[in-house]
Image (tube, rainbow, N blue to C red):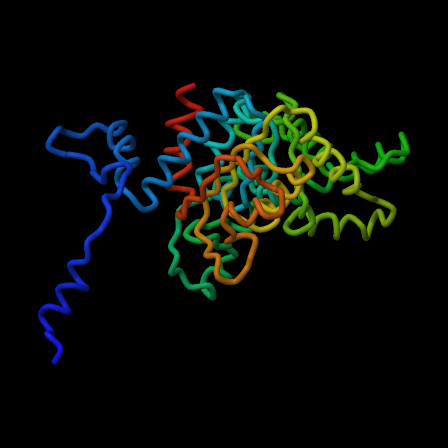
Length: 328
């Protein structure tokens, strides 16, 4: 007959080896409020706090070793207040190359022409449409911003077209972005500082947004107008060969994440990598993929230091910058 008590205790109270590593311990608020010490305590907190602490360590190594840093971010980062954080990094030459989406360009320019305001995630789409207000999460953007963008962008395209006729050269997307930064001439713009500091900006999905809409409208008037994307992929891929080491900081996923990773495959992988996004891995998407998947492709080096932090970049990225670039 089975001794139930003995069997249960044997299974539950199974002997174990002693685990070695950092002891889990959180911040002691009995010592008062010290934000720097709170962030330091993340290292021993566990879960995403410890992953975030690892991200801080990796970025500080990038800075210390003067690696060539790729910063990638999706358009919603620029829709939000992270625009100012990214601008700080570009203005002060803290990163070496940018990759973003169409919205990541046009919304920076649109903010130079008018403000975005805080709204509500649960606002009625029907009511907002009646009022001509576009919603990006809980951020409201009056359609007037895109009207002003068109009024600014159409003459800009005409200038590019006339230059194309004059010199016989089709402009690349990255050249266009620099000229856009020069044209907007506004110190609040990420791309003004990218132009001033000659930091290349690549936008693989250039036509997926208001810029694409404007190119569409412009082509009715100037059907011969062209933009060269082939030159950009050459320049982006060529960027990995000169640096001794490369480091990646990628906010979000999609085409931005894959473009930076695919570029670093040309050198058999980046040396350092930090992802911040909230995408799961279960569906096989590149957006949700962990760094280990990129290692299998040679996009991140097999000896690289890499981490994915699951979370909202609007919460995490300002803290990351505060503990890394802003301190250095």
